[in-house]
Length: 220
Image 1: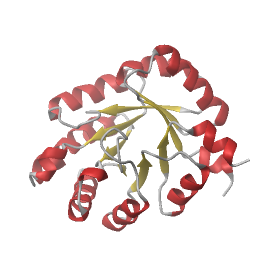
Image 2 (image 1 turned 180 degrees about the vertical axis):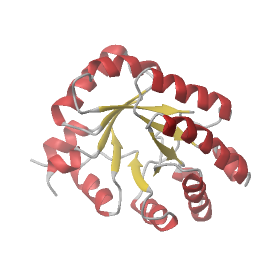
Image 3 (image 1 turned 60 degrees about the vertical axis):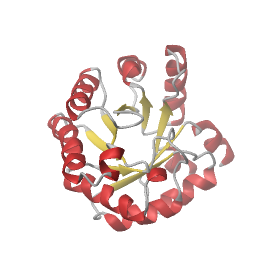
């Protein structure tokens, strides 16, 4: 697979707790240089990233309810609205994992739908992080179906901050759980070109990683 095609599917992540303004500006330069899909930054850095990426094709994405998904729906909706006002073009939201495990499916679906509704009004896409490392097979399938019912654009494996990251078996489960119009993003632990290609071939249309440069250079 062509390395530029792989890189163009990356959401370049700048989400570590200690990431500074200077880090964000540096990573935005890298993102533009290599031609990734988006730079995924913390909500406090959305406006900064928007300015740094102005005039480029790289989008600004951010996280909602990150990393545990436990904020109330109202808080997630407010966070989403503010992020979009600051320039976010894509939102990666974390489901309420505890509510899913408690089988409060109406809550989980409505939580996602709240963010999706305000995002789609602005033409902004929503990727729903289900945190596969914390779920069993049935729970993964249920989470994907709830995200689809709520109108989300993507289901995403992981935050990268709760247990292991993405696994190929997760992608197979997720792809089988949703219809063909639902897209999949793998995130967490993708550090090599070979891994990136494997996830794309398994059905992913986006990859979340901070290892963009290493992946590009490994491809030769």
